[in-house]
Length: 65
Image (cartoon, rainbow, N blue to C red; front, side):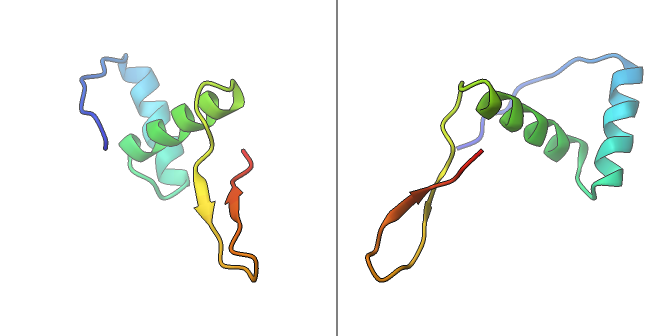
């Protein structure tokens, strides 16, 4: 479930995010989510998602960050 909240940033930071998002075909919101998810995973603040992969042994595989 996603939570809504207000984020206030200066115009220069927003413009840089908007350009970066456009370069990667994302919305600004999507770009912020990607940056936050990556930072949280790299700093062991959030677990990687569990990916169910079909195999002959039906094993659950954890995604690598």
